[in-house]
Image 1 (cartoon, rainbow, N blue to C red):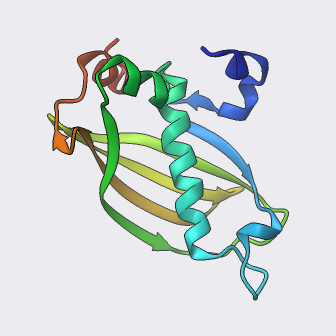
Image 2: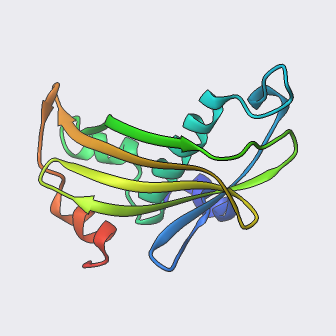
Length: 149
């Protein structure tokens, strides 16, 4: 755990029942002219959820990149459904859980919720790459994400 995470652990969300849960507040910059969250802002919220999931299993992306010769995750495919709208000052919850793990890719199921209301659902396939080529997801990360650590 790095120093910033150790000092402010609540900023990284928490693991609950096999899913990562991250609170996100909606700011003015996240909204459009109608005062509702702009659709692209949800993509940023989802990205934060995926990043914090890795941090929650003690794998910071910057460390992973440095320790594995440049390994990174790239979004390969995303299926997203916009079901409701959030507005400024809402506190949302981004829920991220591993759905499917393959050799060089994994699919994550994500939701953005306001209380019990699901506003956005997304299935996001990310691929592990190094130097522009697909590589196997490291076994330690695979085990941490699937609960087999």
